[in-house]
Image (cartoon, rainbow, N blue to C red):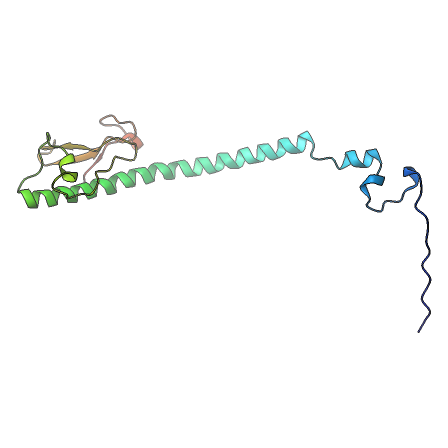
Length: 159
């Protein structure tokens, strides 16, 4: 076995300029501390621009899906109301009048637990007789006005 070398002890330098870089933050020079202080304005601006671009891409891709989902929900609600109208007709031998409206379905007859609003927060429309002679249940679409195109188009009960 070879003999172990003896450790050499050196005193710490008394002046900051003579100090070796041993990781001790209190011994680092003022310039070294400033170099590690944080991000520059340019770096922060680049990150903000990138986040803005990513947010824009997500919003552009998600918004059409939300419109489609709202339309599909309205179609499903109208189909459910149509089934409740059929149950009411079987029980009462007639459809509710326009004056009674859809509220009679959630009332005493109990054919539907709760009458939903359309996805835009407005009540579904009901007409008996409707424009085609039978009962008509529909939503006025996103704009709440009769007619319209695209997302503003009326959503009728499919016969």
